[in-house]
Amino acid sequence: MQYAAQRPAWLPSEERCSPHYELMTSPTPVQSETTRWSVERVTALFEQPFNDLLYRAQSVHRRHFDPNAVQISTLLSIKTGGCPENCGYCSQSAHHQTGVAREALMSRERVLDAAGKAKRAGATRFCMGAAWRGPNAKDLADVIELVKGVRELGLETCVTLGMLRPGQAEQLKEAGLDYYNHNLDTARDFYGAIVTTHDYQDRLDTLERVRKAGIKVCCGGIVGMGESRTQRAALIAELAALDPPPESVPINMLVPIAGTPLAQTERLDPLEFVRTIAVARIALPTSMVRLSAGRATMPDAVQALCFLAGANSIFYGDRLLTTGNPSTDSDREMFERLGLHPSAAHGAAQ
Ligand code: SAM
Ligand code: DTB
Ligand code: SF4
Image (cartoon, rainbow, N blue to C red; front, side, top):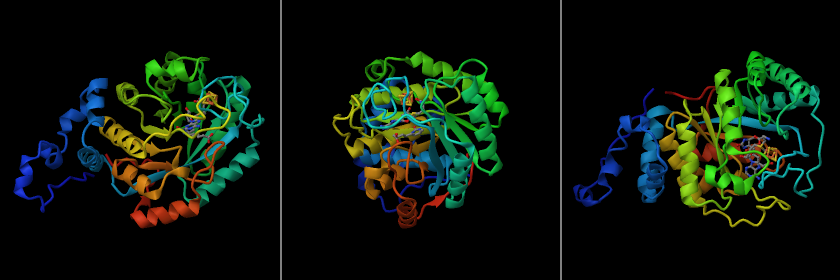
Protein backbone atom coordinates (compact mmCIF):
# COMPACT_ATOMS: atom_id res chain seq x y z
CA MET A 1 0.00 0.00 0.00
CA GLN A 2 1.34 3.44 -0.90
CA TYR A 3 0.89 6.50 1.28
CA ALA A 4 1.57 9.31 -1.16
CA ALA A 5 2.73 12.71 0.08
CA GLN A 6 0.63 15.59 -1.29
CA ARG A 7 1.73 19.15 -2.00
CA PRO A 8 -0.05 21.20 0.66
CA ALA A 9 -2.91 23.07 -1.04
CA TRP A 10 -2.44 26.10 1.22
CA LEU A 11 1.16 26.72 0.17
CA PRO A 12 1.18 30.21 -1.37
CA SER A 13 3.10 30.69 -4.62
CA GLU A 14 5.54 33.18 -3.04
CA GLU A 15 6.86 30.26 -0.99
CA ARG A 16 8.54 29.11 -4.18
CA CYS A 17 11.37 31.56 -3.44
CA SER A 18 12.44 29.39 -0.48
CA PRO A 19 15.76 27.66 -1.22
CA HIS A 20 14.20 24.54 0.27
CA TYR A 21 11.05 24.71 -1.84
CA GLU A 22 11.95 21.62 -3.84
CA LEU A 23 12.49 19.67 -0.69
CA MET A 24 9.28 20.94 0.86
CA THR A 25 7.05 20.09 -2.04
CA SER A 26 8.75 17.22 -3.82
CA PRO A 27 10.04 14.68 -1.35
CA THR A 28 13.04 12.62 -2.38
CA PRO A 29 12.64 10.83 -5.69
CA VAL A 30 12.21 7.11 -5.13
CA GLN A 31 15.43 6.29 -7.04
CA SER A 32 17.55 8.11 -4.43
CA GLU A 33 16.29 5.69 -1.80
CA THR A 34 18.45 2.98 -3.28
CA THR A 35 21.55 5.13 -3.71
CA ARG A 36 24.56 4.37 -1.51
CA TRP A 37 24.61 6.50 1.64
CA SER A 38 28.10 7.91 2.19
CA VAL A 39 28.87 9.57 5.54
CA GLU A 40 28.88 12.93 3.71
CA ARG A 41 25.41 12.38 2.26
CA VAL A 42 24.04 11.26 5.62
CA THR A 43 25.65 14.27 7.32
CA ALA A 44 24.01 16.55 4.75
CA LEU A 45 20.63 15.11 5.80
CA PHE A 46 21.37 15.99 9.43
CA GLU A 47 22.20 19.54 8.41
CA GLN A 48 18.92 20.38 6.74
CA PRO A 49 16.52 22.74 8.47
CA PHE A 50 14.48 20.71 10.95
CA ASN A 51 11.15 21.18 9.14
CA ASP A 52 12.60 20.15 5.79
CA LEU A 53 14.20 17.07 7.33
CA LEU A 54 10.99 16.00 9.04
CA TYR A 55 8.88 16.63 5.95
CA ARG A 56 11.18 14.49 3.86
CA ALA A 57 11.39 11.73 6.48
CA GLN A 58 7.60 11.64 6.86
CA SER A 59 7.22 11.54 3.07
CA VAL A 60 9.61 8.58 2.77
CA HIS A 61 7.80 6.93 5.67
CA ARG A 62 4.40 7.24 3.97
CA ARG A 63 5.71 5.60 0.82
CA HIS A 64 6.39 2.39 2.73
CA PHE A 65 4.31 2.26 5.89
CA ASP A 66 0.98 3.07 7.46
CA PRO A 67 1.95 6.38 9.15
CA ASN A 68 -0.22 5.71 12.20
CA ALA A 69 0.80 2.12 12.91
CA VAL A 70 3.44 1.29 15.52
CA GLN A 71 4.74 -2.23 16.08
CA ILE A 72 5.18 -3.18 19.72
CA SER A 73 7.68 -5.61 21.22
CA THR A 74 8.26 -6.49 24.85
CA LEU A 75 11.73 -7.09 26.27
CA LEU A 76 12.83 -9.44 29.00
CA SER A 77 16.29 -9.85 30.46
CA ILE A 78 16.55 -13.64 30.70
CA LYS A 79 20.12 -13.61 32.02
CA THR A 80 21.13 -10.46 33.83
CA GLY A 81 24.49 -9.03 34.89
CA GLY A 82 28.06 -10.28 35.20
CA CYS A 83 28.89 -9.78 31.54
CA PRO A 84 32.63 -10.13 30.75
CA GLU A 85 32.45 -7.38 28.09
CA ASN A 86 33.25 -3.78 29.05
CA CYS A 87 30.70 -1.73 27.04
CA GLY A 88 30.93 1.72 28.62
CA TYR A 89 27.19 2.37 28.69
CA CYS A 90 26.05 -0.96 30.10
CA SER A 91 24.66 -1.66 33.56
CA GLN A 92 25.38 -5.37 33.11
CA SER A 93 29.13 -5.29 32.52
CA ALA A 94 31.15 -6.97 35.29
CA HIS A 95 33.74 -4.21 34.71
CA HIS A 96 31.50 -1.53 36.25
CA GLN A 97 30.06 -1.18 39.76
CA THR A 98 26.42 -0.50 38.92
CA GLY A 99 24.61 -2.51 41.58
CA VAL A 100 23.09 -4.86 38.97
CA ALA A 101 23.49 -8.35 40.45
CA ARG A 102 24.64 -11.30 38.39
CA GLU A 103 21.83 -13.79 37.91
CA ALA A 104 21.50 -17.24 36.36
CA LEU A 105 19.40 -17.90 33.26
CA MET A 106 15.73 -17.45 34.08
CA SER A 107 13.54 -20.55 34.28
CA ARG A 108 11.40 -21.52 31.30
CA GLU A 109 8.32 -21.12 33.46
CA ARG A 110 9.11 -17.49 34.36
CA VAL A 111 10.01 -16.61 30.78
CA LEU A 112 6.82 -18.10 29.35
CA ASP A 113 4.77 -16.45 32.04
CA ALA A 114 6.26 -13.04 31.09
CA ALA A 115 5.73 -13.78 27.38
CA GLY A 116 2.08 -14.69 27.99
CA LYS A 117 1.56 -11.41 29.87
CA ALA A 118 3.23 -9.45 27.05
CA LYS A 119 0.95 -11.10 24.52
CA ARG A 120 -2.18 -10.33 26.56
CA ALA A 121 -1.01 -6.70 26.87
CA GLY A 122 -0.84 -6.50 23.05
CA ALA A 123 2.80 -7.11 22.13
CA THR A 124 3.41 -9.00 18.87
CA ARG A 125 7.09 -9.78 19.46
CA PHE A 126 8.96 -10.96 22.55
CA CYS A 127 12.68 -10.09 22.79
CA MET A 128 14.92 -11.95 25.20
CA GLY A 129 18.28 -10.46 26.18
CA ALA A 130 21.22 -12.22 27.82
CA ALA A 131 24.34 -10.56 29.23
CA TRP A 132 26.86 -12.88 27.63
CA ARG A 133 29.90 -12.28 25.46
CA GLY A 134 28.22 -15.03 23.48
CA PRO A 135 26.35 -18.23 24.35
CA ASN A 136 28.13 -21.54 24.95
CA ALA A 137 26.58 -24.77 23.68
CA LYS A 138 24.51 -25.34 26.84
CA ASP A 139 23.32 -21.70 26.95
CA LEU A 140 22.23 -21.95 23.34
CA ALA A 141 20.36 -25.22 23.92
CA ASP A 142 18.49 -23.58 26.83
CA VAL A 143 17.63 -20.47 24.80
CA ILE A 144 16.38 -22.65 21.94
CA GLU A 145 13.83 -24.20 24.30
CA LEU A 146 12.70 -20.68 25.27
CA VAL A 147 12.38 -19.62 21.63
CA LYS A 148 10.24 -22.68 20.88
CA GLY A 149 8.01 -22.00 23.90
CA VAL A 150 7.51 -18.32 23.06
CA ARG A 151 6.69 -19.19 19.45
CA GLU A 152 4.06 -21.65 20.63
CA LEU A 153 2.32 -18.73 22.37
CA GLY A 154 1.92 -17.11 18.95
CA LEU A 155 4.50 -14.38 19.39
CA GLU A 156 7.33 -13.41 17.08
CA THR A 157 10.67 -14.13 18.72
CA CYS A 158 13.84 -12.10 19.03
CA VAL A 159 16.97 -12.81 21.06
CA THR A 160 20.12 -10.83 21.78
CA LEU A 161 22.84 -13.09 23.16
CA GLY A 162 26.09 -11.38 22.10
CA MET A 163 28.51 -12.83 19.55
CA LEU A 164 27.60 -16.04 17.73
CA ARG A 165 30.11 -18.68 16.65
CA PRO A 166 29.81 -20.48 13.30
CA GLY A 167 26.81 -22.83 13.34
CA GLN A 168 24.96 -21.18 16.24
CA ALA A 169 22.79 -18.92 14.08
CA GLU A 170 21.71 -21.99 12.07
CA GLN A 171 20.61 -23.69 15.29
CA LEU A 172 18.54 -20.64 16.24
CA LYS A 173 17.00 -20.55 12.78
CA GLU A 174 16.13 -24.23 13.05
CA ALA A 175 14.33 -23.46 16.35
CA GLY A 176 12.20 -20.94 14.49
CA LEU A 177 13.80 -17.69 15.71
CA ASP A 178 12.50 -14.67 13.79
CA TYR A 179 14.96 -11.86 14.73
CA TYR A 180 18.45 -11.54 16.20
CA ASN A 181 19.34 -8.19 17.79
CA HIS A 182 23.00 -7.20 17.57
CA ASN A 183 23.75 -3.49 17.41
CA LEU A 184 26.67 -1.73 15.76
CA ASP A 185 25.97 0.88 18.45
CA THR A 186 28.09 3.74 17.10
CA ALA A 187 30.55 4.82 14.40
CA ARG A 188 33.44 2.49 13.63
CA ASP A 189 35.94 5.20 14.66
CA PHE A 190 34.23 5.77 18.04
CA TYR A 191 33.65 2.11 18.93
CA GLY A 192 37.06 1.70 20.60
CA ALA A 193 36.24 4.57 22.98
CA ILE A 194 33.14 2.68 24.15
CA VAL A 195 34.30 -0.94 24.35
CA THR A 196 37.65 -2.69 24.05
CA THR A 197 36.83 -6.36 24.75
CA HIS A 198 35.52 -6.89 21.21
CA ASP A 199 35.68 -4.83 18.05
CA TYR A 200 33.49 -3.60 15.20
CA GLN A 201 34.50 -6.49 12.95
CA ASP A 202 33.31 -8.97 15.62
CA ARG A 203 29.89 -7.30 15.49
CA LEU A 204 29.83 -7.42 11.68
CA ASP A 205 30.86 -11.10 11.70
CA THR A 206 27.92 -12.05 13.94
CA LEU A 207 25.54 -9.98 11.81
CA GLU A 208 26.73 -11.84 8.73
CA ARG A 209 26.20 -15.22 10.41
CA VAL A 210 22.67 -14.20 11.39
CA ARG A 211 21.86 -12.98 7.89
CA LYS A 212 23.31 -16.06 6.19
CA ALA A 213 21.27 -18.33 8.46
CA GLY A 214 18.11 -16.62 7.21
CA ILE A 215 17.20 -14.88 10.49
CA LYS A 216 15.90 -11.31 10.29
CA VAL A 217 18.39 -8.72 11.52
CA CYS A 218 17.66 -6.16 14.22
CA CYS A 219 20.62 -3.78 14.31
CA GLY A 220 20.90 -0.18 15.43
CA GLY A 221 22.76 1.87 17.98
CA ILE A 222 22.90 4.34 20.83
CA VAL A 223 23.18 8.10 20.55
CA GLY A 224 24.16 10.53 23.26
CA MET A 225 27.41 8.75 24.18
CA GLY A 226 29.51 11.83 23.44
CA GLU A 227 29.84 11.06 19.71
CA SER A 228 29.87 13.85 17.12
CA ARG A 229 27.10 14.42 14.60
CA THR A 230 29.42 13.05 11.92
CA GLN A 231 29.77 9.89 13.99
CA ARG A 232 25.99 9.59 14.28
CA ALA A 233 25.90 9.93 10.49
CA ALA A 234 28.64 7.30 10.17
CA LEU A 235 26.61 4.84 12.25
CA ILE A 236 23.61 5.32 9.97
CA ALA A 237 25.79 4.97 6.88
CA GLU A 238 27.13 1.65 8.26
CA LEU A 239 23.60 0.39 8.92
CA ALA A 240 22.43 1.44 5.46
CA ALA A 241 25.43 -0.33 3.91
CA LEU A 242 24.46 -3.71 5.38
CA ASP A 243 23.22 -5.74 2.44
CA PRO A 244 20.33 -6.20 2.75
CA PRO A 245 19.68 -3.49 5.37
CA PRO A 246 18.40 -4.63 8.79
CA GLU A 247 14.66 -5.28 8.97
CA SER A 248 14.63 -3.52 12.33
CA VAL A 249 16.77 -0.57 13.47
CA PRO A 250 16.61 0.30 17.17
CA ILE A 251 17.73 3.82 17.98
CA ASN A 252 18.53 4.08 21.68
CA MET A 253 19.08 7.32 23.59
CA LEU A 254 21.78 6.67 26.19
CA VAL A 255 20.26 5.87 29.58
CA PRO A 256 23.01 7.07 31.90
CA ILE A 257 23.83 4.38 34.47
CA ALA A 258 25.61 5.34 37.71
CA GLY A 259 28.91 3.47 37.97
CA THR A 260 29.52 3.23 34.19
CA PRO A 261 32.17 5.33 32.43
CA LEU A 262 29.39 7.13 30.51
CA ALA A 263 27.33 8.06 33.58
CA GLN A 264 28.23 11.75 33.39
CA THR A 265 27.98 12.18 29.61
CA GLU A 266 26.29 15.40 28.58
CA ARG A 267 22.68 14.76 27.59
CA LEU A 268 21.98 14.92 23.85
CA ASP A 269 19.60 17.66 22.69
CA PRO A 270 16.24 15.88 22.21
CA LEU A 271 15.83 17.61 18.83
CA GLU A 272 19.11 16.05 17.69
CA PHE A 273 17.64 12.71 18.73
CA VAL A 274 14.57 13.41 16.58
CA ARG A 275 16.89 14.33 13.70
CA THR A 276 18.68 11.00 14.13
CA ILE A 277 15.38 9.14 13.81
CA ALA A 278 14.48 11.16 10.70
CA VAL A 279 17.85 10.50 9.08
CA ALA A 280 17.57 6.78 9.87
CA ARG A 281 14.11 6.74 8.25
CA ILE A 282 15.41 8.37 5.05
CA ALA A 283 18.55 6.22 4.75
CA LEU A 284 16.71 3.00 5.70
CA PRO A 285 13.35 3.57 4.03
CA THR A 286 11.96 0.05 4.35
CA SER A 287 13.33 -0.83 7.80
CA MET A 288 11.26 -0.62 10.94
CA VAL A 289 12.86 2.19 13.00
CA ARG A 290 12.46 1.50 16.69
CA LEU A 291 12.28 4.29 19.26
CA SER A 292 14.12 2.29 21.92
CA ALA A 293 15.86 3.09 25.22
CA GLY A 294 15.37 6.58 26.61
CA ARG A 295 11.58 6.89 26.41
CA ALA A 296 11.18 6.83 30.20
CA THR A 297 12.52 10.39 30.42
CA MET A 298 11.26 11.60 27.03
CA PRO A 299 8.23 13.89 27.01
CA ASP A 300 5.31 12.70 24.86
CA ALA A 301 5.83 15.73 22.59
CA VAL A 302 9.36 14.54 21.75
CA GLN A 303 8.12 10.99 21.18
CA ALA A 304 5.38 12.42 18.92
CA LEU A 305 8.11 14.13 16.85
CA CYS A 306 9.97 10.82 16.66
CA PHE A 307 6.84 9.15 15.22
CA LEU A 308 6.47 12.04 12.79
CA ALA A 309 10.14 11.54 11.85
CA GLY A 310 9.40 7.92 10.94
CA ALA A 311 9.82 5.82 14.08
CA ASN A 312 7.34 2.96 13.83
CA SER A 313 8.09 0.57 16.62
CA ILE A 314 8.68 0.72 20.36
CA PHE A 315 9.46 -1.44 23.35
CA TYR A 316 6.29 -1.77 25.36
CA GLY A 317 6.25 -2.83 29.00
CA ASP A 318 7.35 -1.29 32.28
CA ARG A 319 10.97 -2.45 31.95
CA LEU A 320 13.61 -2.62 29.25
CA LEU A 321 16.42 -4.94 30.44
CA THR A 322 17.57 -3.39 33.72
CA THR A 323 16.06 0.10 33.47
CA GLY A 324 12.55 1.52 33.35
CA ASN A 325 10.29 2.19 30.40
CA PRO A 326 6.98 4.11 30.35
CA SER A 327 4.09 2.15 31.89
CA THR A 328 1.77 0.30 29.51
CA ASP A 329 -1.06 2.55 30.70
CA SER A 330 0.83 5.72 29.80
CA ASP A 331 1.78 4.27 26.40
CA ARG A 332 -1.84 3.36 25.67
CA GLU A 333 -2.85 6.90 26.59
CA MET A 334 -0.13 8.36 24.37
CA PHE A 335 -1.25 6.18 21.43
CA GLU A 336 -4.78 7.43 21.95
CA ARG A 337 -3.70 11.08 22.10
CA LEU A 338 -1.71 10.65 18.88
CA GLY A 339 -4.24 8.47 17.05
CA LEU A 340 -1.66 5.69 16.73
CA HIS A 341 -2.56 2.03 16.63
CA PRO A 342 -0.46 -1.07 17.22
CA SER A 343 0.46 -2.82 13.98
CA ALA A 344 0.11 -6.52 13.34
CA ALA A 345 3.23 -8.67 13.34
CA HIS A 346 5.41 -7.99 10.28
CA GLY A 347 4.34 -4.35 10.22
CA ALA A 348 5.88 -3.28 6.91
CA ALA A 349 3.31 -2.20 4.32
CA GLN A 350 5.87 -2.03 1.50
N1 SAM B 1 24.91 -8.56 25.20
C1 SAM B 1 24.19 -8.36 24.01
C2 SAM B 1 24.87 -7.39 23.08
O1 SAM B 1 25.77 -6.67 23.49
O2 SAM B 1 24.49 -7.36 21.90
C3 SAM B 1 22.77 -7.94 24.23
C4 SAM B 1 22.35 -7.00 25.28
S1 SAM B 1 22.75 -5.29 25.06
C5 SAM B 1 22.17 -4.75 26.59
C6 SAM B 1 21.66 -4.72 23.79
C7 SAM B 1 21.74 -3.28 23.40
O3 SAM B 1 21.09 -2.47 24.37
C8 SAM B 1 23.11 -2.65 23.28
O4 SAM B 1 23.73 -2.98 22.09
C9 SAM B 1 22.77 -1.18 23.35
O5 SAM B 1 22.48 -0.66 22.07
C10 SAM B 1 21.53 -1.14 24.21
N2 SAM B 1 21.82 -0.57 25.54
C11 SAM B 1 22.42 -1.20 26.56
N3 SAM B 1 22.56 -0.38 27.62
C12 SAM B 1 22.06 0.82 27.24
C13 SAM B 1 21.93 2.09 27.89
N4 SAM B 1 22.38 2.29 29.11
N5 SAM B 1 21.36 3.09 27.21
C14 SAM B 1 20.90 2.90 25.94
N6 SAM B 1 21.01 1.72 25.29
C15 SAM B 1 21.58 0.70 25.92
C1 DTB C 1 18.16 -2.41 21.85
O1 DTB C 1 18.69 -1.82 20.89
N1 DTB C 1 17.72 -1.81 22.95
C2 DTB C 1 17.21 -2.78 23.89
C3 DTB C 1 17.28 -4.11 23.09
N2 DTB C 1 17.95 -3.71 21.90
C4 DTB C 1 17.85 -5.30 23.68
C5 DTB C 1 17.90 -2.76 25.20
C6 DTB C 1 17.89 -1.39 25.85
C7 DTB C 1 18.59 -1.51 27.17
C8 DTB C 1 18.53 -0.23 27.96
C9 DTB C 1 19.25 -0.32 29.23
C10 DTB C 1 18.76 -1.36 30.19
O2 DTB C 1 17.54 -1.48 30.44
O3 DTB C 1 19.61 -2.06 30.75
FE1 SF4 D 1 26.19 -5.14 28.11
FE2 SF4 D 1 25.91 -6.66 25.90
FE3 SF4 D 1 28.16 -5.22 26.31
FE4 SF4 D 1 27.62 -7.35 27.84
S1 SF4 D 1 28.05 -7.34 25.63
S2 SF4 D 1 28.40 -5.38 28.56
S3 SF4 D 1 25.39 -7.19 28.03
S4 SF4 D 1 26.06 -4.43 25.97
